[in-house]
Image 1 (cartoon, rainbow, N blue to C red):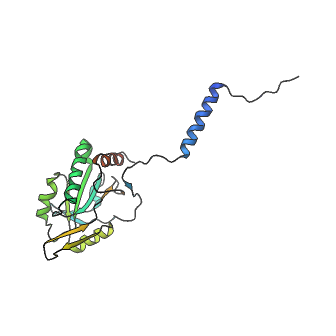
Image 2 (cartoon, helix red, strand yellow):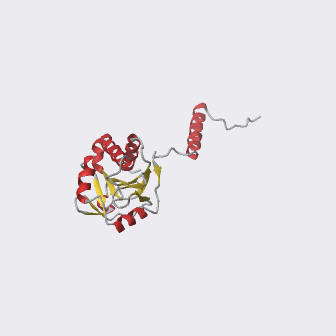
Image 3 (cartoon, rainbow, N blue to C red):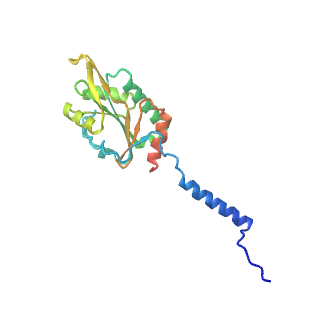
Length: 203
């Protein structure tokens, strides 16, 4: 009588098969998110930025290709939100160390009537000398804010003694100039540092 051979795997081959199956199954599950801030890759806004910096130089996003760019909209007489945001980015730059040279922080004023070039040149670099303050005409400011979906409006005595209600998040562009992230106000600097490092690494 001839014995029929059965397809029985040896113990070593069985372990290999189990490992391969586990790897395939893990590939089917949800992957860990690359970023901890809100990923807005592919957004169809935030494409227009043509303003003047506090040195008097005309600027566009193309000027900063090769760097991660963060953009925050505010105003110099803001009592708390704006200085908190800029202080947070100052700490981000400190934690980034040498990588901070590949990052450009931009502060766009939504109060061009009061935020002159001189005032911005004193206010913005006080947080970090590498930071840039940008301004434009009332019309230019409105156009850029609209493109970034930023809300702002005067509140109080609009003849001169007023505050401005405005959006408080930060936009982050990767080194190729693509809008990638939206960072909520008050985010832990360590979170922003990790996200920026991921963008610098080509994520």
